[in-house]
Each structure stands twice: as structure tokens, then as C-alpha cells.
Amino acid sequence: MKKTYGPVCRLVSLTLVITLCLSLTACQSTPGTKDSGQQAESHEAANADASEQEPDPVEISLWTYPIGNWSSSTIIANLLADFNKQYPHIRISVKYLDYNTGDSLMEDAIAKGQAPDIVFEGPERLCANWGDRGLMADLSQLWSSSSAGQIYDHVQTACQSENGAYYIFPVCESAHCMAIHHDLFEAAGALQYLDEETHTWTTEGFIKAVAALKEYGVEQVGAVYCGGQAGDQGTRALVNNLYGGSFTDPEHSYYTINTPENIEALQLLYDLEGIDFAPDMTGADEVKRFSSGDLAMTFCWNVAREINETLVNPDLNFDVFPMAFPSPTGVPVLEGGIWGFGIFDNGDAARIEAAKTFVDFMTGTDSQYAKTVLSTTYWPVRPMEDLYVNDRLMTEYGTFTQYMSDYHQITPGWTEARTAWWKMLQEIGSGGDIEAAAKAFDDTANESAGHIQTE
Image 1 (cartoon, rainbow, N blue to C red):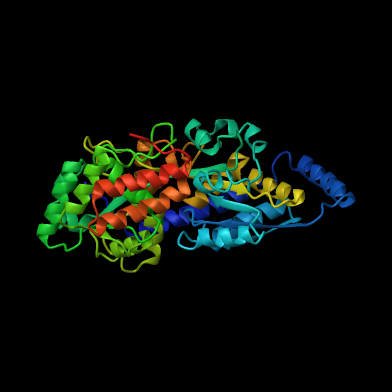
Image 2 (image 1 turned 180 degrees about the horizontal axis):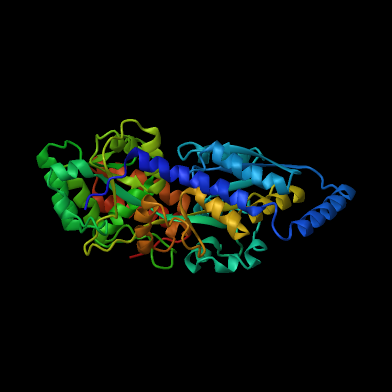
């Protein structure tokens, strides 16, 4: 059955996030309760103690990648206002990064000794990159709390470095997916090749759907974008799912693109009429092309993409239908994103302690943690029932979480592997030998991981 939400419903979803955040704030302290006198007395005593020994002011910086709605200054300002009610002496400046330039800005700041105090991102950067380089503070102390003990095992595994340290405290997670132009699929008779109830399809169904769209007159059904690493989670999942391949070994020790399954998938994408390799197209470019109706499908999608694109893109005037990546059996293995706070060790104990205070505040109590998760439009990393119980859009995308794989983004040499990946796709797109390109990827990535596989 076709599900149409439209711009109004997407606006309701975002409004619900903001409203819930504000209402949770209001519920934290309600005057007139039966113990209000005790609260007032306790508050006066606390103020008296504070006046005797005011904490020294501390200024710290927070840099955030666009994690869900963490590109919205309004939402972040509300969270910081909550924090400063309790910790007025800690002032936090915020810098908003994007995935096209964020890494270069961060590396430049590191080189100049000006790294931010707090970063909101994932284990692949906080642990497998900056943590392994000795740049981050160990947050194991935060992991000893009772609430941290509830964090899902697969998240905890992804957040712990090989040396046992935790360089990230997680906030949320989400499954990456793809999406289709439902209206075009319907007009081309291609909906018969997917399961609309489960949002899944087989590789055979994918091939038939592309053919139907091409025959209907869609010039470019989909694009294997490879103009850079941003959005590469989509092309990785596409290739790995088509014939049951994998990106790494099960232990996430080395890279495994040069296998028969992945070679067959890359060959299919190269040969399939309607799917083009796009060496100059980034993930963001592909999303824009899809949202404007130029592409019938996007491989770079998740719930935050849909909310943001619907609200800010006036050209998106069709029904977006999220889909899992096609696989031989129709049961996908989806890449998941995990995001949380990391703290750079800038050599200032007061700033590190202030940053830990901020992280603990944002993730500690259930009420505040719910607000933090809602601000991202993703899902919590510990049990929290009914967070999105009245949100149809979030419920729809929530079906993908059951297909999430473990987190291979912490494999050694991850940064170099990401670069080698899009360069490999460019080589294939230009007509290069697929097996040779896949072998070159494995050699490069595994060398950066510290070991080269021998035949």
C-alpha cells in the first residue's frame, strides 16, 4: 500500500521533535508540587554554598557534524540553554561542520593545536582515527554509570578501542538506507518488483525495476556517485548487498572487496542500463538530483535526509519511499550509523572536565537523554520505549533497525580505505578492469590497516 506523508507530515515530525524537547524541559521542574517547599529550601542551601565558592568560568568549544537535526542552531541553542541553567559557568561555542569540508577543517585545527574540546560524530573518526592517534581523552569514567550499563552491546563494542579506552560516549544510532521515487515506480509498473510492506526487495527485483523504469523513459535511474567519500556508506551497502558480499572480515581486521560476490556486484552495476557511474557526483549531489526528480532512486538516504529534504527543498514534490538495499534473498544487511560525543585532550584539565560535565548532562537522566536523542531525529542507544510512538515517519524508518549489521567502520586503516573506495569506483566507471581495481583497493586498504593479505 502506498504511504504518502508529504511536506506537512514531515513538518509535523520536526515540530514534534522540537515540541517534545521543550515539553520535557518544562516537566523537569514543576512548581506547586507537594515537595516544593523542600525543593525551595534545598535550592536556597545550594545557592548559599555556591555563593561561598563560585566555580571558575570555563569556555569550551563544540564542533558538530550534521547529525540529524544537529545542523539546526535553534535546536542546539535550546539544549545549551538547559545545560547553562544548571552549569552557568561553562560557556560553549558551537561550530557547524558539513561532510564535504568538515574533515579538512578538523585536521587543520589539529595541526594548529586548536582542536575543539567536544566533537559530535561517530566511532570511525573519534575512535579509529583521532583516538588511535592519541588525540582524544579517555571517557571510561562516563561508561561506569548505571545508564551507560544499558547501552546495547553492539554499540558498546563499536565504541571501545582496541586498547580498551572509550573515546566516544554514544547518543544515537540509525540504519542507512536508500529510497525510490514512488510515483515514477508506480507509473513504470515497477512497484511489483518490491515488497512495500517490508520495504525490501531482491537483487532480481532491483534489476527488473531498473529495466522497467528505463523502458518507461527514465534516462538515469540511479547513479553510483564517486566524487568523494561523503555518502560512501550508500555505495558500500549497495555493492555488498547485491550478491551477499562484505566490506571486511567478521572481526573487522582487514578489507574484503576483492571477492567473487563483490566483483559480480560491481560488474552488474557497470553493465546495468539505467545505472551510471558518476565520477564527479558526490553523495550530496546525488541527493539533490533525486529530490529534484532527475533520478528515480537514491543510495544515500536515511530518515534525517527525508525530513531535511522535504522541508528545505521546494522541488521535492513526489512521494519518497524508503527502501532497504536489494539482496539475493531480500533480507538486507544495512550499515548503521552510531554518533556520540568525543573530547579532545587539549592539555587543559579544567576544559576536559567541563566537556565531560556537558556529555554527562546530555546523556545522563532519561528525560534529558530523550531530549538529546529527539534533537537528532535518530534512535536511542539504550532502551527507551515509546519515544516515537505517535510519529508515523519515524515508525516507518524504524523498521530498518532490525537489519543493522555490526560496525565495520572501526576497522584499522578506515580513513585510507574510504579514500581508496571512491577512487576504485572512479577507476571502474572509467572502464578499468573491475577485478584489478578491487584488488588494488584491498592492497591499499589492508596496507594501511597494517597487514597485506597474501594469496
